[in-house]
Image (cartoon, rainbow, N blue to C red; front, side):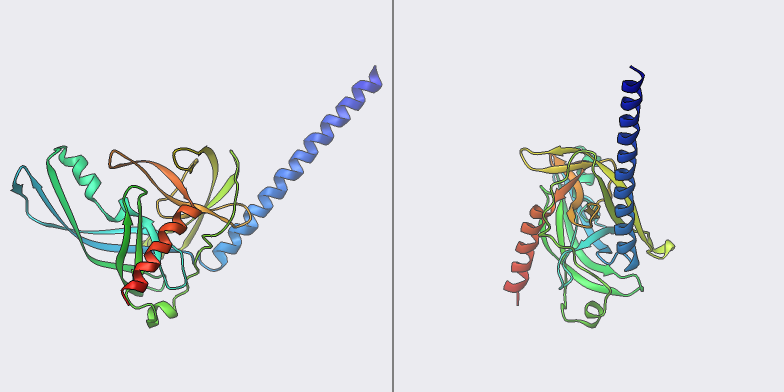
Length: 261
């Protein structure tokens, strides 16, 4: 009897030790991946600024135009500097409609200036090349894809063709950058996948996220980009749009850029 108890105890200790070693290995891999990203300054992430003119009319009455300057994080998705951002973060239409609370309100947003803000303080003039409000995605394209600012910029596109099959409670890395007053230093956050929504469209729900930021697994493979779930034309909860969906939109933006040549 005592031998059986000792054996069971030993097996239990061995199982716990094995679990601890596995957890330590995962943590070590996660940390190594995070350090690798930070070593090049999170070159896949940039700040994007937009100056917009907003015109509002309600029941035939027009209000004075307003100008807003917005900044948001974006993810570089190709070598020509195409950047994907959360549409809600640079287009204030939905938030203005929510404030007005009038079904007959007409909100028109005109993008007057869009720029990629680099870590060294330089800026790359851009245009808004594509928007998908339903998926909360907008694509920003440099005006001069062979310009000096872009060719010398320390940016690195993500691999939108990464194949990852994450599971619930998997740890992931969220890359970001601090604002101008903190010198746009790279940041890394660790989150867990709290839910995977399969239908009507696949999304990942994380314990925390940053709109426009890329999300990677422990090995550094791209899961997707964090955006808002749009419901009734309004941004609601934060979700992560899988990389294959982002790829479809990026390809459309690239095709539009080619057609404009």
